[in-house]
Length: 366
Image (tube, rainbow, N blue to C red; front, top):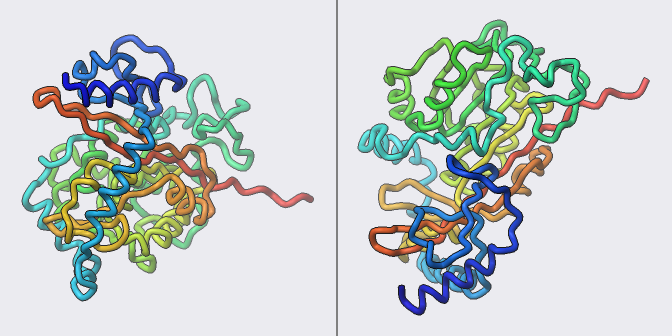
């Protein structure tokens, strides 16, 4: 191991040594964001990923300078609009080329987002916390919802019938792609009173989901939808969803549109409903790898295939969701050290992971 590498690892180990963590033995690290902490530089190549890696000031400044350098030369203004107006075409080509093979199934969903676990099929609450308990098992913070039983499905809408209308718990995934979240969820909710909606503005992506042998219209409804279009209706009433999953989708949208998108999605949640978010963080390895001439605007880039990506900060995420009227449950910066053990290379990864709740309705005092 080189002297430079050893010096870097010592700084990393020193930075993470004070992080509180839960002990675990075997299996997957506990949530949130794992518990595999690097404490001995000599063990760096024993695993592919290390959690809770804190950057030094020098590393942060180096990353900032690299991002600043690769964004100096921007795509001409007259060429930028096509990446927004024709975004669905770029993603159609992406899924036509890669089919279902590009992304892995997100088996980590239930570790980081236990809110997706189907509640008990009968009462929609866990056995130890039934409808008469003091804690609402569908809410992470333990705030009791006094107007409705946990997971109840009271709707007031002009929609007479819609897919999933008889479900007691409804989940929507936006930007579902070829189903890398959809099918892990479908495999779990079968036989319960949970219904999953999923949408993408790529018609090819939705075709791939509907053609999949595990797609079941009895528990899932896949449909084409551009979430930037805030005027077209969804195939279910407003305020009818318990969970909205927003995973690696807002980063693909022009940052000027993101706030209206989140506000529109917030209107689909029931009071007490939760939006689950995960996406790219500022100075992630993938941002620093962009070449000059691929930048559209600050921290917003286009890839070689025409798809786009934005890199968020914690403050930006908080403002997006709080300005949509949602309350913060969790807003974390997930910094990890990714290791290529074959090439003996280490790389910094940064993701954002957040949970925001729609406030409960407080009845007026009599």
